[in-house]
Length: 286
Ligand SMILES: [Fe+2]
Ligand SMILES: [Fe+2]
Image (cartoon, rainbow, N blue to C red; front, side, top):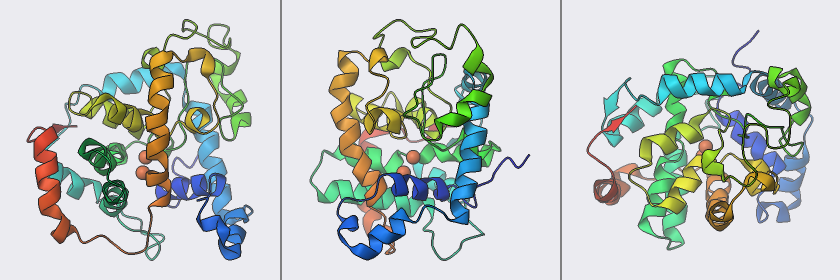
């Protein structure tokens, strides 16, 4: 079994763009054609990626990863060293299309800043994919990126490639296969375990430092079945419904801020040093 079918982590995000094209970009015919061109070899790798993700992200797997990674006993770094570390995730197979990870983070945060949002949201944009360092700790792609979904209850058919869930051992488990599974109705997402990946990891890393709407952005930015498809309403409480607007506000900055022009990090650095200094401790634990 090939554990890492995607040519790069970004291939997942590029595929998300196929599902949710930029409403502005699809105004042009060429872009529409590109976005709609679903039958490419690239899509086969994405499909295989989701097959692995949906097969192996069980309730027990998530508990095991939480135990393993939420101790944060691997590494301690300044935010700047953490960016250097994250940037070791380079994509050899496709050198001309991809910006490095820091550039995606800066394009996201700069787009948020340009629109005049609160500084903590700019910081949220800067940090939102830091959890991808999980790959550098040896985790397979399917346990780092991809759409996230609740585990411990029935899977929604609104999750992309939901047909692959039938191969997940939880699918036929009587405890997990009911709509609410191990959860109380409308218990709130904070009580729900999500499939394991970079969202939950960065949320746990930063949960003491960023205001609540930013924490929802970090924790649920890949939960497309919720914030784009409206699924899982039976698990939500009022607080989730209130926070949904923030998660929705964030998503276009993540998806549609990519541009081939790299941000000028040297010029931007003083602003981000102040911003990081305002909210985050001098080192972060990984
Ligand atoms: Fe992400
Ligand atoms: Fe992102």
